[in-house]
Length: 345
Image (tube, rainbow, N blue to C red; front, side, top):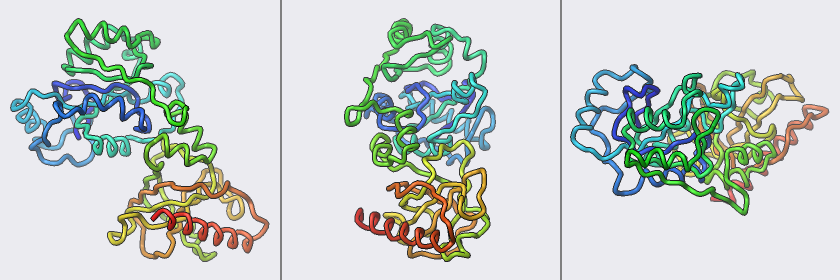
């Protein structure tokens, strides 16, 4: 997928889904469906695979030229997601906003859906001051040559969020651009939203969070050196280093599926017990750690990138009076995780 934060290097023409899209949940995927219709799908580009992320002018050698050549052979729009970086709330508040899907995860899910381009509009004061008319005319029409635009029906844009979807349709119509308004999506009578997912995760309600997402909530990180406390009590754990902006669910213990530990037997993931917390019983710390114990598996995990699918919330974080009580509870947690995960196979 082509990723750029510069409109001058965006691939055009584009078929645009517009929004923040934190989580890439079921509602977001519905907004993206109109730009992925069969008549607008492109065949994979005949260019060298891109390694890493490309921003602005930081392109792999010769890749932009190859893309330009490919562009000349077809006028079908590139399925494109246009979003903002940083999140507008982060810009206005001045505080880092935790994300359900940091950029690397967002790219992964968008590629799986079939999106071929991600445009990260730098959200600054100039963009914040842009009128709805200027946003459509300058960014969507002039720079991206948008052939169609898809948004959720509650989408707002432009200075002080003054632009409505009705206004978007009217402005785009002047240029012959179709706007798809996707109705709000619900699950079990509740609105599907990133806020609802966050709240469910904070409550430890994984069933609801995963239902809204349409997949298990995931943590992806590199295994780094920890204090090896788990090893001393008979339950070695892999300490994961996550992106600093990753949203963490309720502190506690989870049954998880683990991918990336081994090239063997991972079709359904390895079973694991995950602890997110501040180690209140042993070596209490201020910053929470993310540590997973793999059930019925051992090996060297340092330096590997693991993907954890959170399947069941087992219990909240608690402090025990002794190490023996802690060890007994960990054993119970592992047994419960194994039973729950085995029942899904």
